[in-house]
Length: 362
Image (tube, rainbow, N blue to C red):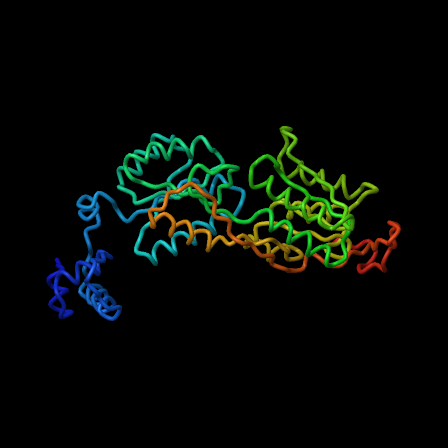
């Protein structure tokens, strides 16, 4: 078995230097150059050195494992969870840390026990359950295991929290549609009671209000607690709006899933996107580029959110506060100038059709 002494001899450095490099330790007054660090790691890899992480964890009382709770892909509709996992694993690996996914179906007691058993250095928690977040924090506090909230908006976060700027994202979506000439917008949501969904709705309302009467905005929340599939219920709701006399020229959707449902509803109603109707989503999922047409969507900075959360976790700064990360809008082909132009007096003037009569394809 290769030892640190073997690496020290091969790299022509002291054993102490090898230990400091491989354990990512820094001692005041000891300056190890980047070149020496690269050399030691290269020699260790060449000799096949394998560090005993379990022994190191026992000695230090803490491992280099970060727990991730609430990243259960099978339980999620949003593919954004996969993006979060990918970004978290990549950045943690770059910092020489490992990730362990824990099921959010486990009780808080079970989760806390597992975190302590693995001597985790910290936990990234994604949840909508405020009580669960507070309970987990209380159980891990004596063990010195910090908890950072990731992609989990609360009105008053009890822990350090990293979230996307949901309100500003909706403002960007509304202003983009307004720049195309849209004046009648409908905001559609699967649910409208979580903090992040409330923020998105408020962003929509703020942008409409800021237009000083130039925009007309309506709200549609399809979560009516009926025992019907959420996609079917939402599609029916959108079709009802499209068949009404107050049909909007554009939909602003609070998530990409609702935007996909809106695209499908438009097809059912014989409308072509974006010729007859514009649609903007929120989430920038990988599947957005596969829809017909590719979906314009607000893009949360998942990679930067994960990096910020891990940096916060490793810094030891546990002061409760919310770090709001800026978002952007990814413009694709689901939005265009409206086919129905509004005159100054509010009358509607039909523009020449940009599709063949009877062609329902998008």
